Length: 111
Length: 121
Image (cartoon, rainbow over all chains, first blue to last red; front, side, top):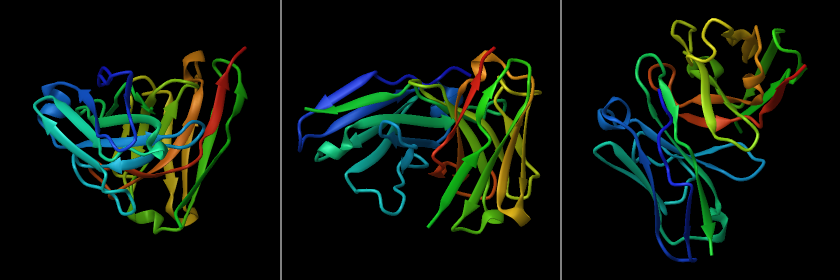
């Protein structure tokens, strides 16, 4: 199963909103609401920020939200803050042979 | 506080074996599925393998199937990854990750800090 496609980079100014896309197929994102999003700062372990499409784990800021349209999932960060500068990865159910497929990753820069 | 601590990484020659361990604490280990996810230095994440709470459901990525074996010891709150016939492309940081649920599709809500496996001659 091929990796999900994300933009290499997204940037925004403090206070703005940004959206990161994650494009798959009907076999991954399209037929299931099983997309999760992970934030990873350099040299650190990933951190779950959205699971099952649009659910936020306890302790994650309400500025993070997830959505889906067709074969594309999206992560929106509103009220962008410096601490949001990080790499972000989506992950989806990939089918019986590969249950989990990650995206290519997006570097978010706060201008 | 949930803690996942990986160990067992290191430098190994192609074709040799290595066994990774993950010591879990701060939660009821035998209630949750567990996974291994790897990341080549400077690259993206790749799911490697997962095991349900009772070891009844085990899955592997195609790239490691037949070479890697995941297991768990609920009495010891520990997760393992036996890696045989290692290849150069297995070089990566290996993360232990806790599933949100005990079985089925379980996203990864806690991660260890990772252990580096380097396959080189």
